[in-house]
Amino acid sequence: MKLKNLFVMAIFALAAVSCSKDDGKDPNGVPSITPDQIFNLPETKVPGDNLGKVQASDPDGDPLTYSISGEAGPFVINSTTGVLGLAEGQSLDFDTTNTYTLTIKVTDNSDTATETITINVIQIDPENLAPLIVEDQEFPVDENVTEDFIIGSVQASDPEEGALTFSITTDASELFEISEDGKLSLVVGASLDY
Image (cartoon, rainbow, N blue to C red; front, side, top):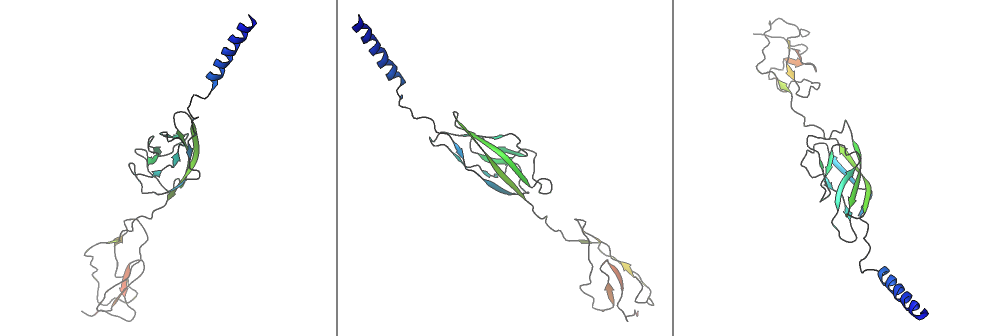
């Protein structure tokens, strides 16, 4: 009987050992996200633009799923490709927020990795539009005016509402001068003669 019990225990131990052996599968490798990724984006980017791809990998080659963990700001991420974009209706404005820090999460459906990325918004100077001078301005004046008499003020405006500085580019008579703020007068020593 002892031999029979010993034999049963040996079979049980062998079964337990064989069940606990590695079943041939390697343990799942944990995905990783490249640390310290920085994206420098001009503030002119719009929804639909590719803002850059978050670099991540999985040692087993498993497909990764990307997401933004926590506050996303105006950003979205493609869950399959890791490409960043702007959410619909969102924009970037350097004067409002010039740096964002996002926490990115990737998973291979078994393990998860997180890493922070930095997005710097680059200010773009707006296109400078030329000032507009009111066309066909006329300044009737008597011929006996003196050089300190203001003949008139040239009317002009700047589309960006910037300050204007006036100057005369062509005056074949060499009789007139204009102040930086657009006031037209005679040159010192000049006189009109009709």
